[in-house]
Image 1: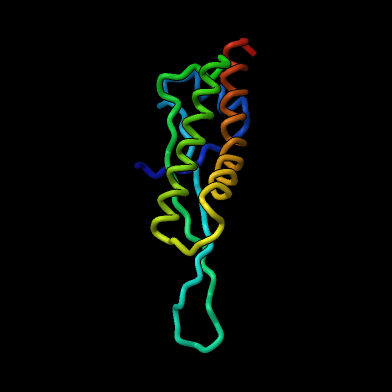
Image 2 (image 1 turned 180 degrees about the vertical axis):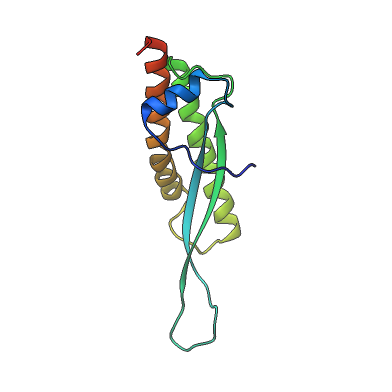
Length: 128
């Protein structure tokens, strides 16, 4: 597991990064849950803490400009979301939301970055 900053920027900037000799783009899929934690013994106050875990997903070996490459990358992102949510569920068994809801939310959030990378790859392939 490697921690990175999520990919951000315009499609044109992403296309430039894909075209250069820079390292392959990757995104971080971050899942989070709410946990009730007793931090202080103050009566009637139980703080709610958000915990999160992120997995890096690489585009290595994929051509995101193709349908098959894009699908495989999306599958990697979904698998990473599920893995992170299951791990959080094991670490914090009384947290919310459940694994399925957590994975859907993490995947949905990451898909914004995935779509940007796919669009950049398509732009690069079309020569725009």
